Structure formats: structure tokens, C-alpha cells
Length: 179
Length: 179
Image (cartoon, rainbow over all chains, first blue to last red; front, side, top):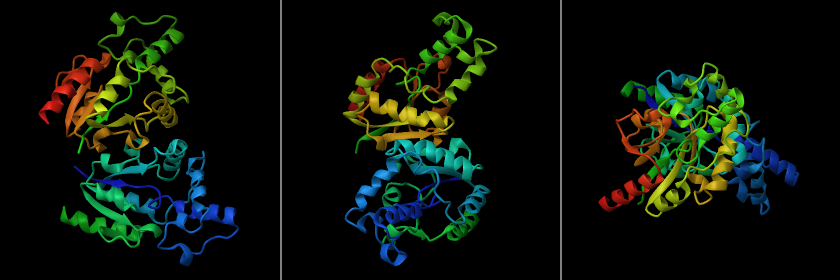
């Protein structure tokens, strides 16, 4: 039986960061540069920024996110030797559910809907590996956790880090030979 | 730490059966009686019935289902000693996602959205107990599975059966004293 990978969406396959930057630019008149935000949570950049989080509740917010570079080819490569489930924190945002479903069917049509999981607390997930940008999701995971680099997690050092999709594929290529 | 229960929605807390019967009545001009359908899959009752399944894809189908008798009080009772997650097969039907989210917030507002899981293949779920009307979901589950009685599962005998919410609560009352 193939081993199973639980794969996060936001900041791992879906580029929500660039959408946040669009909102900052629209609301504050200036797009933050990478040197300003890298290593921080975007919401801490400006006293008003926490308000922008309201956008996440709106229909359509999650529908037009760009695809993270290399993720489509990367997932296809993983699927040759592993079973890939999309495990995304979505249940806080009712309107994100349909958006995320459509987004996945558009950009990752090769992943079956049976393997979509829209959840909240990811400690409910059973898998062999989890790829996620949030350390708290990996903390409660019983398999092997891989931390996908994002601005907010660069100081975290408890998990195996993958900086991009090339590193994800390389990790699993090596792992496969150990199985 | 509280033990965790993965709880199905359709035919366990949400009465989808009566909605199916409404559709049969509308499409065929006659509401099937319990003696006609009990022990069978409703779709096998009539050669045209498989077509009715298309209704599941429509927005609103899952929004107005009646609540299964005793389930609200039952879930509240379980939550005193267990952590309850809603684990529902929803990802086949994009439009069911928002409907199910709204339905849960209306009828089970005491369950946190962090504990909602909208998925497809439930073998991704990690919990101590699972309550479900589909034997195939219990087959792949690693904890203790409870089969909630529904018309389509009455011949199944591999799992502990619960016929109604009174029996669910009684089961967990006994279980709790063993912990």
C-alpha cells in the first residue's frame, strides 16, 4: 500500500501571500517589500492590518489564488509513489469551501475529490507525512512532519524544513528508496 | 485528554432519508412506505431512481434536512466527556460544503468549526471512535467503529450497532466508566 501524504493548500500549493500583499497595497496605498515582511506575520506589519483578515470570509477570496511554483509538477511526481490528500484548514471560512473545491478542480484536476479534506483542527488527520507551513499542525501530527517555508515560520526549527517544491520532491525521492 | 469521536452527518444527525422520500414522491407521484424500502438502498426501488441522485449536486439540497431525533441532546451529552468531530463525506458535492456548514451552525452551534471535517475517503480520519451508517467507513477506521442503523445497512453485522441516539448515549455512558 502506498504511504500517504497530507498536503496543506495555503502557502504550500496556493499562493495566499501574494493576495495578502494585493490587499495591503489596496488598503494602504503601498505594496510591502519582501525585506519589510519576510520573517514576520503580515498582520503585524501595520496597526490596521488585522482588519484586512475580514477579506478571508468573503466569497471568491480563495478562488483566484496563484499556484505555488512547482507544486503541480511536484504533486504529480509524489503521486507516482505516494497517496496525496489535500488537508486544508477551511472550516473557519464557510465561503472558502466552495472556492477551494473549485480551485483544486481547476489547478489539480489529477487529485480525486475523495482526497480533499476541508477541516479546522488538523490533529484529526491520519497520514504518514504532513507538509504544512504551520508548526502547530505538525506538532499534533503523529507521522513525519515537513515544514514548508513561509514568512511566518522562518524561526521554527523543530521540523524538517522544505524551502520549495524542488526540495519536497527531493525529500520524497530519498524517502522512497528507504521504504 | 478527552477521547475523540468522529461523527458522521447524513443519516446519523441529518435526516437525508426523508428528503430522498420527498424526491421519490415528487418524481414518481407516490411516497414509498417503510415496508417497501426498509433494508434496501432507496436507489434500487425504481429503475429511474438513480437519476434522482443528481439532486445531491444542487445548491440547497443539504441545507434544510431535518435533524435526527435525539441527536442534538445526544451530542451535547457526549461532549461532556468526549471530543466530538463532525466527519462528513462532502467533497463529491461542491455545493454541499456551504450547505452543511450552515446546517451545522444552525442546528449544532455548540460544536466549534475547528471540529468540522468535510472529506471524501474517511480513512484519513484519526480518532478513538467513529459513528457512521456506512460500513466501508468503519472498515478502514483504526479506532472503535459504531454502525448507526440505516435502511441500507441492516444486514451488516461486523460492527457494534446503535439503532438510535438513546443507544449511542448509553454506549458511551458505559464506555466512559471503563476509561
